Amino acid sequence: MRARYGVPLAITAVGVAGIAYAAGFEARSFRLRRLTVPVLPHGMRPLRVLQVSDIHMVSGQRKKRAWLQSLAGLRPDFVVNTGDNLSDPEGVPETLDALGPLMEYPGVYVFGSNDYYGPTLRNPARYLLEKSQGKHGLNGNAAAVGVVHNPWEDLRAAFDAAGWVGLTNTRGRLKLEGYELAFTGLDDPHIKRDRYEKVAGGPEKDADLSLAIVHAPYLRALDAFTRDNYPLILAGHTHGGQLRIPFYGALVTNCDLDTDRARGLSTYEAGGHVSYLHVSAGCGTSRYTPVRFACPPEATLLTLVEKA
Image (cartoon, rainbow, N blue to C red; front, side, top):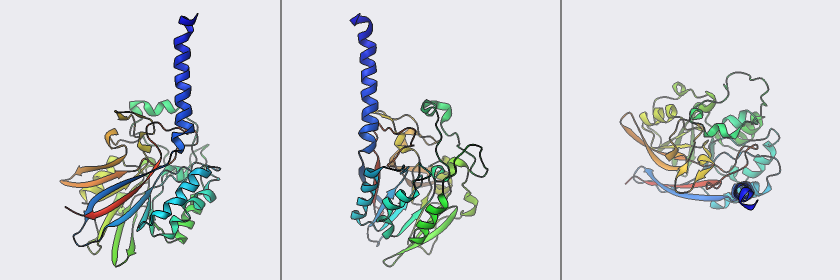
C-alpha cells in the first residue's frame, strides 16, 4: 500500500508546496535590480532611471502598494512606466496611491493591454506551448465581446496631471537640470496598437539623449527602434518568464522575443546598428495566475553613464 501510493502522494506534496511558495512567498518578494548602462554622450553626468512595469494592481494588495511607494526614496532623476498597471477594473485608485510618491518625479509612460482590458480566465498551460509565442492578444482597435474594458482614461488623466509624459505612438520630452531628454514611444504591440510610422525618423538631434519606450518587446518594434539607432530601448510585458527553471531560465516570453532576453539587459542588433535593450520582469502577475517561481517581482534602477 505504501509503495503504491507513496510516490504519487510525495509528488502531490511537492507540487502543493511549490505552488504555495510561488503564490504565497515569491510573488510578494519584491526586489530592486540595479544596472549600469553606458549610453550617455561624453560630458553628461550619470542619470538614475527607475523603471516600473507590469504592476497588475488588484484591490487589496497592500504590500505591493507600500513597496512601490518606498521606491521614491531612491530619488531617481526620472521614472519610466512601461505599462500593464492594472489587473482589476477597480484598481485605479490603489494604483495611483502606490505610484503617488513616484509621480512627484519627472516621468514618462506607455500602456499595455491590461491597462485597456481586464484579464480573462484562461488555461495558463497554453503559454507554455510553442505556438503561443508571438501570438497577439485582443485586437485593440475593435470592441471585443465579453471583454472588460478598464478605466485607463482615469489612469492617463492622473499621470498627465502629475506631469508624466504619455508616449502612445508619439514623442515627448523631459527637461532635467540643463539637459533635454527626448523619448519615442509605441502603444502596445501585443494588441496591435503600435504605429511606428507615426514616430519614425530616429533620435532627435537637438536632444541630449533619446530613448525608446514600448510595453511588449515584439521584434518588429525592436527592429524599428534599433534601425533608427536608439541607444536604449526599455520594455516590460514578459514578467521575466514568470515561471523560470533554475540554471535554465525562462520557458516563455508571451511574445516573439527569445527567452534569453526575457528579463534584464542585453544588446539587440538590426539594420547595422546595436541598441541596448532592457526588459523588466515587472512586479505583478495576472489576478488569475498569481504565481512566480525563480523570478521574483522587481523594479529596476538603471544608472545611465557615458559611453565607453
